[in-house]
Amino acid sequence: MIVVMKRSATEEDIQSMVEHVEALKMKPVVLRGTERTVIAAIGEERVAGIGSLESGPGVDEVLPILAPYKLASRELKQEPTVVRAGTLTVGGDRIGVIAGPCSVESRDQICSTARAVKAAGATALRGGAFKPRTSPYSFQGLKEEGLKLLAAARDETGLAVVTEVIAPDDVELVSDYADVLQIGARNMQNYRLLEAAGKSSRPVLLKRGPSATVDEWLLAAEYILDAGNPNVMLCERGIRTFESHTRFTLPLASAPYVHQKTHLPIVIDPSHGTGHTSLVTAMARASIAAGADGLIVEVHPNPDKAMSDGYQSQTFAQFDEMMHECRRVAAAMDKQLG
Ligand code: PEP
Ligand code: MN
Image 1 (tube, rainbow, N blue to C red):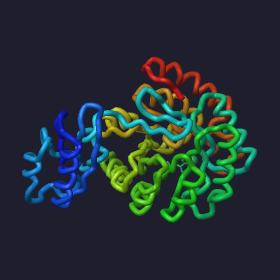
Image 2 (image 1 turned 90 degrees about the horizontal axis):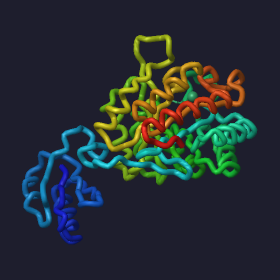
Image 3 (image 1 turned 60 degrees about the vertical axis):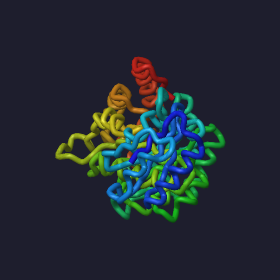
Image 4 (image 1 turned 90 degrees about the vertical axis):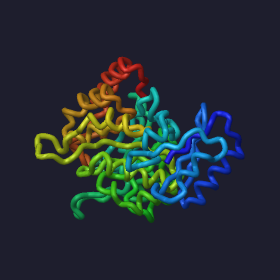
């Protein structure tokens, strides 16, 4: 339920409603807007006594939240959420650009990439230290050593670091080095991991599972929000379909659809979404035109030699050209790229 307080409601009125909601065995979440305060009452809505909320002091109206996700829903919060982490801003009129290699491979590789993507206008550095690979025999990442190299690249360039965490027990370690925790497509429904990320103070980039519906994706985001972390960015990275000319099928309608359903920002990944370097720039431009709040793109100093996802990674020059083209689309959308 959403308890909308009157403009004239006092702090005592709000506190009294918080206690009232708790007495109904629901969890109160107070959202203070510029105009008025609303209290989300999260939990089983069919409990006895819910009607009594309406007559509480300072209450204007009580509305049901119809979406299965509550904290993520637009019904609860109309203003778009803007997520900030160091140099990265995602949402509102800013389109954040997260760029870097699929995997961190060496100091020289990650630092040279950080310098190049920063010069081209990226606002955050990506790079996997813990890699969830389809095969156990593929490169699994440099792990903590990779995190240290990412931190060194941040020290040198100032760019915020986005990197994946694949296990609940690693959240603390990864949070020590990263500015943003990435939860990968394969882990979108790893509920213990979502809860652990929800307890972290770091913003989370939640990738869509390749077989997940939008509702399942938003319910996964709800786990993070419900655990106390309000800074969630959704990431559309393509879904599995019958089509095989691209690695995944990138549904760009996710951007406007997600904007209708949730206040959370959406970042689009045209690298995994297509699986072919030659298709990335066009889909990045289209993502911005569709309303993306951010892009995440794989860039490598020498894609032919990359230890993972080289076939979809851009060279520095290709990334620079993509940024020029995307800047023009962003301007047409009255947004700023970067
Ligand atoms: C990645 O970002 O390199 C990655 C593994 O992505 P996804 O989880 O979307 O497959
Ligand atoms: Mn990758």
